[in-house]
Image 1 (tube, rainbow, N blue to C red):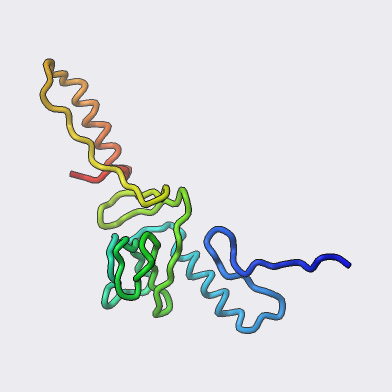
Image 2 (cartoon, rainbow, N blue to C red):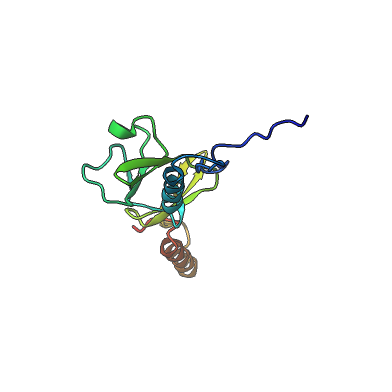
Length: 152
């Protein structure tokens, strides 16, 4: 006799609910999976905060701060999306990138959420090199335009 096949109940990367043969109320599982996909595709968050907004709009997504309170308690570092009148949470995985609309820059999840800091413009020194400073200024401007470092 062969071993029985074990089916996973969620997908391995983002815990999307999977359907099984003969499963009742499949629409609930499909809708949850689609809501999670909607939250993760072209992922942009409104910002980072510790408590849920009082009157969130459908599709609104936030990065939950580590000191989260209320409905977000214990969800620090996760993404919270408002779908179907409820908060849906997604645990980030290594390499996940999001765009923070409040700071206009990307964030990267690598053990924890990281974001670039604005480099300090070189000042002073023994020799003032106008060309070097201009090149550094142009580099910083490009990094800002790409959302890698924040605007001043």
